[in-house]
Each structure stands twice: as C-alpha cells, then as structure tokens.
Image (cartoon, rainbow, N blue to C red):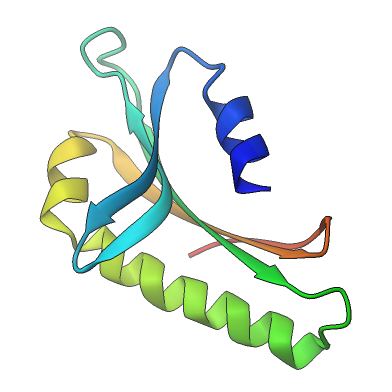
Length: 109
C-alpha cells in the first residue's frame, strides 16, 4: 500500500515525496517536502504515518495502531530535519490506517 501511495504522491510537482524520512530516532513513512524554491508561497508540508491491520483485526487493534501513529507523528514533528526541511510551511501530520486493502481511518494529528 505504501508503494502505491508513494507512486501517486510522486506524480505531483509541488512536493518531494520522501519515504522513510529519518528524524528523531525514527523514520516517518512519508514526508512531503514542499518545493519552496519553485513555489515560495506554499503553505503546508505533510508527514504521513501508515499503519496496517490484518483483515480480522478488531476495533481495539485499529485504535491501538492509530494511537501509535499519532505518538510517532508528534515525535517526528519535533525533529530537526523536519523543522528545517518544512521551511516556512505549517506541518500537517496525517495518520492512515488500513485493514487489509481497505482504508479505515484518516486523521490529522
């Protein structure tokens, strides 16, 4: 799933899609770094954490995965690398939780 998301995000010319972006002793699944040299008026950058649940996962497991993703995103948002590479933009942190192939949860932290 992450490969499909990355391929899709890589089609835009406004952001550099950086997979497994290293920061604060961890790796954000996807960081969308704005191309501020070409588009200096961009307002947002994005950090996306993707979690996967098995097809038979219950609601409690889905919530546990979402909570873990939120915790990681807060850690990543404080990273020197993210703070530097987001430039003047506001960082938006997004949680995606899949159950099998189905997207069950999308949340902004």
